[in-house]
Length: 268
Image (cartoon, rainbow, N blue to C red):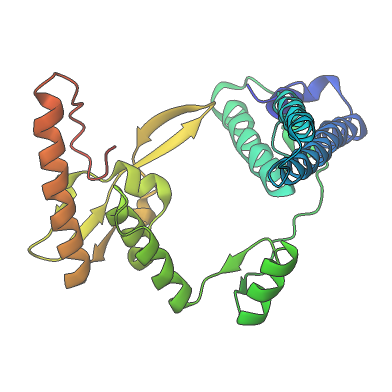
């Protein structure tokens, strides 16, 4: 169970100030760890740049290679136990879920006398505004490596360049569907072939896959998320080609008893 969830579950043992302080300490430790990994990455890259051009002097090349190997080993060791920094959005999502569960327990089972989750003080939630990858922003990113914002949006030309780049990828039909149909990830991963009509040009979103405690589960989406999406002729043609590739893979892998029949559209 994630440490943050454990902290919330023990809310009855901690005051609001203690809970907030615990959250901040957890994130502070993770931020320091990530900064250390960034330093080790820069050191590894610098060692690699010094090793590659070294030539002529065998001793110098041997020394620079050893320095690179040591820096790379230090980076691997430094990455151990690296966790993502828990964002304010994730904190609010965890707390909302727990609050809903406690409220259900208060209402149905009378298991709780108070909704402790509502007492948790969390950082303010500010959603970043998306920015478009303009030529100027692309040039700045290439020159400095700095992203203009946390949420960047492709132009139609950049989207086309991406599709051209992944044209031979096994899951090209999935990337194409994401771009032109805009479904959620869990919905496309759960999409079954019986809910797709390539002749009538539609597919129906009626299932999703969710991740809970690092385990995957299939479930029905919310009622307002069940919907039918129209397919263009191009999308239908790409899905038709994909189905032929999948059928070929099914025959090859079934011959050695290794095919798992899930009836889902997108398989690997």
